[in-house]
Length: 529
Image (cartoon, rainbow, N blue to C red; front, side, top):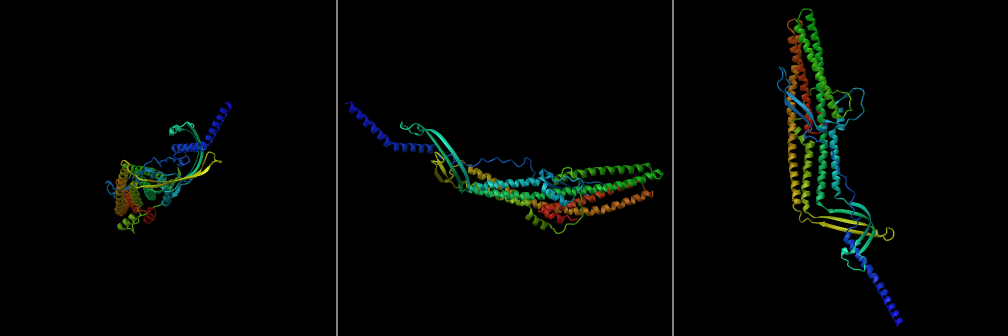
């Protein structure tokens, strides 16, 4: 009986073993299925598939300095009524603001005084002026923005490597059996190359076109900055040479006043003139000497400003050597100048490119309503051990995104883009009108300056002749020093008027060169020695 029970127990145990052996493949499949279910539910993509590329750095702003709308201006106004005989009816000022008033000092410091021509000053400024450097930095930034916009249209390829160790509670995914332990551990390695390619994305395409037009506009503005630098440096150079001419005339007048004072003192000592005559001549001499001191200070101050504009080494002494005599304008009429300006003004070209950039922004905003298509693909190896169980794996996904409802965001983007488009078109028309105004004002200034040069020249000759006669009359004892002082004051005023008239005329030519565009090439044709 006992033997029979033992045999029965052995048969039951053998049956259980055979049953377990038969269920082992089924359990393995079940476990694999559960693992696959868990992996798919917890890891829709492996970490290697989720690689998106390196973190992008935050761009640093170009500068905290603001640039005025008109950093370089030449303003001509009618001079107030001066003394009798004053023919100076124009008063022109050159104003340079913002980065165009500064530069990066460059080159070694020369021990001697540097002779500086206008051409050399322009070349230095076009290399060192801060306005040009700032505009060049803006071009580099626009190029970078265009590359960033283009990258949205090109493949993005990255490599991702991951090792994953995860312990999962299978009860949380719906498995409620006691056959398999609830706590399951997953461990695998994954190495993949990930590709993401935009097949159809009209928003990114139009944004790329817009970035291209922004780059063109920035390049035009950078070239326009060169014209502004020519205007600033040319105006400052001419102003400095005019002040130096006034100083030279004042110093010559000081020497003349000394001779008049010496004659008056000698006549007083000889009892041929009153002491008041000698005192009056001495006061006139001191007045002219003080005027020379003030003009010398003006020359030094204007020299410092010009040095800052062109980027001379700090402390470098120089002297402006070019002198431009009166030459009437030839070769240009108002109509030809207007035609040339509309073709060559770079700020007008920049405004036109800005319109195209705004048009592209409108198209990009409207394209948000359209579907886009992207492809996401990856390939690599994955397994529980990198060298033993790793197998080749890949996935390819084609994704079509169709906008349905976005709460009015697209309408808002369209309105903002159209607002900018309207503004850019208005700015273009305003710039076009400004170009026309600049050319016409330059011709008005030229005509007024030419007339002033002629009148000032005749007045200068008359003043010097009157002074000569007054001195002769004083030596002859016919008159006193009152007449001489008055004649000397008239000479000083006449010389100053002649210098001012010539400066106004040359400055009007400089304004015309800027107004027509391509000032670097045009200015040497207008200003001739």
